[in-house]
Length: 478
Figure (tube, rainbow, N blue to C red):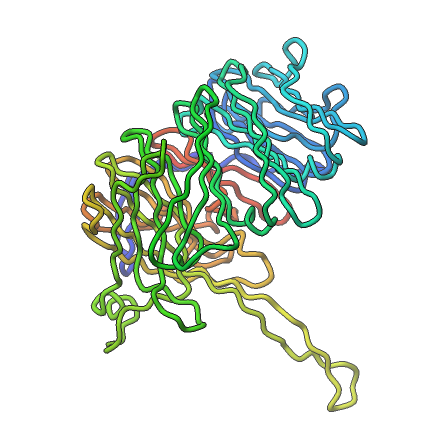
């Protein structure tokens, strides 16, 4: 069904803006598919993958009518699908055929109905335990979807023995297939980053355990022809939380954004953020700048005056968007995970009770920092929200970001309940933000998962809903 919101009214600080909202008919997930993911959109329609112990591919047309429902069961397929790469029409599905001692990675072209086209192509053979391969094989596409990086770590005890890394183009031609010997502690892989740019250049970044003060990352860089160079990049200050690395496809640089801490105390605290760009061929720093959090910023954020230097707690970087001038936009969010025990009476005798332990998930304010080409801050913007839920892993919380180049839309539920509203902050390129309502869930009988949404065109987003065992899609066109 469709709803054209062509009116505007004020509700406190909120206003409803004009957009078209469409909602699919509800349907139950098949018994063996308890998870779902929006793959994207091509000429065939909107592609959704349902998976669990089996895989089902659904295709919806522009009116959100289900036109294809195909269970994927290729010959010799072992386990669930590994990756789906959409073409203008049809797709390529990557899957494993496994024996006890080795796994064969295959790529099967399919048509608009997800029927097989010809025979599957053998991409590679991996000699390792089948459960290890199925758990650790990873896929990373470039921003323009022209290249696909596939990587797999091999372990010996608690050591990473090596990493196999290969890169394919859209025609499934292998640009390079390399194995990098490492002999590193497996903990270094936990904070690792893998990237591929729009020229087929790939990067593996490892954070070594024996790092000095500050943050050091060992970089393994492959050119589009498979030539390997290795180097290290370093920051003078310790990194707080998880840093963000991006390939700047316009300016050709490797970019790092992170919160940093210059304190020696044990508590986790960020004192500012660092922006750094590096030459991807040799790791030479091009620009590095440390921006401390001012007292004025902390006062604005917390509402309390402070006489100390700026300290930021509970915030983590969620998104980084690169600017055309070589700068970046950092988007961070406050997150708190806590547990509490509630007494539960047992029997009728007073004084006897047991306790139920619950996990509380809180996703609160969003902060955006805009960094210019000189690596200094242009502006910052604080966007207020409060989200709390219990024992749901926070799947309905946080936010989804839609990039419209001249502005960003940050969508989130104001309350984690069926009575909640889907709100958005519209953040313009000058740092000004406006908050308004997109839809009321009770009117549509949906329970949205905003952070599982997908932007499928420059002005269109698809957000899944899961309520009372029923799955639906919500399409919003601006």
